[in-house]
Image 1 (spheres, rainbow, N blue to C red):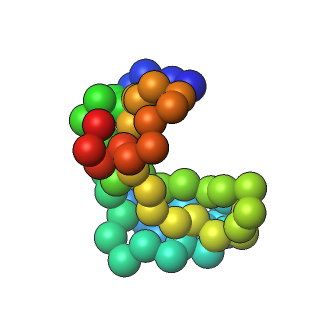
Image 2 (image 1 turned 90 degrees about the horizontal axis):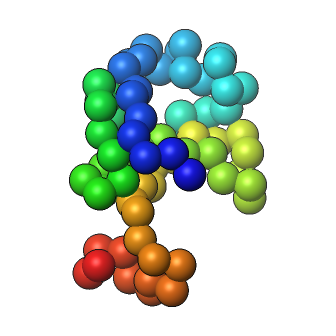
Length: 71
């Protein structure tokens, strides 16, 4: 897992064509520098739905953590 990321692209068509997936999010989050401890809302592609870009909270937490929002 990476510690920090950058996501500055905000063009929906560019993102969808780059990943060959539909963007489900209404707002595209952009970050110059963020890390898992900030718990940002991120764009994700999951194994279950590889043709869909959706939102999720990225965080650094212990493996046994059941509720990331309370951690």
